[in-house]
Length: 393
Image 1 (cartoon, rainbow, N blue to C red):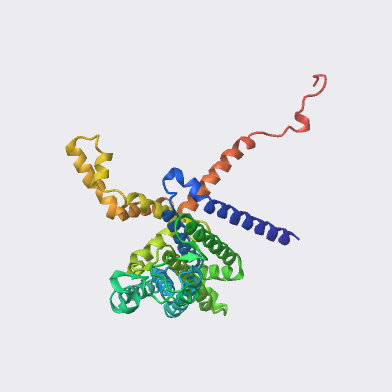
Image 2: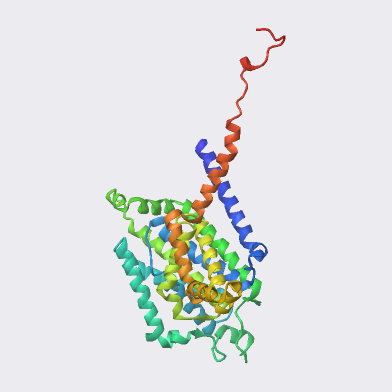
């Protein structure tokens, strides 16, 4: 009976968590406005990279396998979606479905080879595969990827389904969902709905027997193998699911901005999603999304600073001091904003290794302690402590 009540309570908590997450995501245009981050392009990136980070956490957070090559699946998803726009239709649903299938098969092939090793060797293998994919896309497979100029739609693309239904178009059409263009807030809400679905799927995986097996792999894979359990298929399943999430994120990048470039497959993009997961909290449900929002927000803020902006900020200083301060601060903003991110990440790993979610738990614990302390000081009166009527001993 108690187990049934516990299961019911856990399901209720999951439903409340999903509802709260959906409310926060769908109202982002409102509560992000005071932070200057309510414009659609940035909100779309919050949602898209949130999907990317949540999927990466399924592999890294649950199994402990650290991949440095997940940007390869992001790029493959983008290329697959753009090719679907060029050949079939600019409706986003076929492009997303095609990108999911292609990235899933690609992840299956890479995961099958990479998971023959574990630990740092697995990480190096994934990094090597990602760099191979980047070099192939940049310089070798140019008829497919268009090389350094990126793959884009053109007016002369066949678009077989669109041409059959609506006739040839003299212009390059915009990507749409049954007539709703993937620009502005409609594009954000489409990405937000998929983010909520992706979060729900990740939550169900985490609560499922598969999630339990993945956590067992993370805890001690050798001991699990000694019991007779073949853990490799479970790890491969997590790798493929994580790759599908990355492919979905790449497809959404192409849906909101229909081009695909090799730079999305660089090792820096793979490192960025690792930072997102660690910054938010590895192994948590909300942490990767929180980390993605923080990093993309900081990128938007610090990368926009230039020398003129810094001079206007530090204009109150004497000229000599102002020039020195601007020269030093310029190293950490603009194109060098990754230095700021690196310093923040270093401080976080030293003082808060569990990420933002660990900080939230600590604050919650301090708040509960502060609330409970005054109550602990109030002692109930025992019957012997109550004053006797008449005042005698």
